[in-house]
Image (cartoon, rainbow, N blue to C red; front, side, top):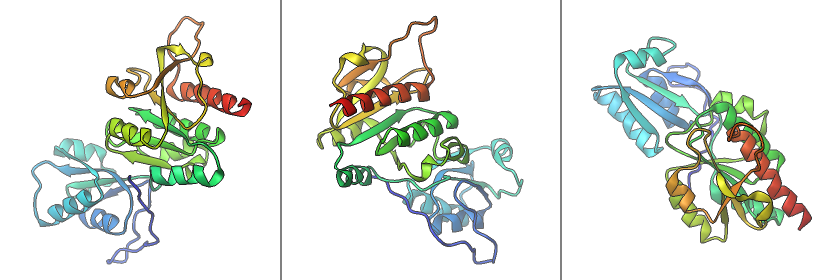
Length: 264
């Protein structure tokens, strides 16, 4: 499982202040020191064709942290840059260090509660992710799981939208959702997928160790992830449109799980 830790290092060798979590880091020395200091980097942008010694060193550090690397052209890199002095590399640091699923399960065990997790498939809107983390905290969820690719990470916008919940509810970032589902099923966790074609949530038993899986508004939960879930659960809709905002859907289903647990 992925687990990243923050660091107390704040100074670079040249005396400059080390960029903090949640910042955009530009320039070879700054990016390299950010990696070496242990900052959690969600994504690294590198100028296409740039393979000199310093950049290779940065790429080695990125590989150690399993950071996503995107090779882009100069126009794209210049567009991302704020300083225009990126020297061919820009790192996007997460706003907060990621947790691990093992820690989430251990936390549930310490509280004497059956694990309650939320897994998000393809949520790209930082406001949605922040809202889900906020709801998760209030609903007593032990942690939120997000994919490494094709999804938003823990940006500063996510942190703000979570209203501080990001500091209390761990978020794990994983490579493969389906593989993680298989691993957690072996630990006794059931998976319920939110989908409009599923059975009405009020008719399902959503108690016990459970992970709620929610996809994005456009495509919903991906086919492979849905096929690996144990239940497909739908929310009653009586209006003229057929979908809810992802964070709202997560909130409705999360509180149905809370309701059933409370009444159990």
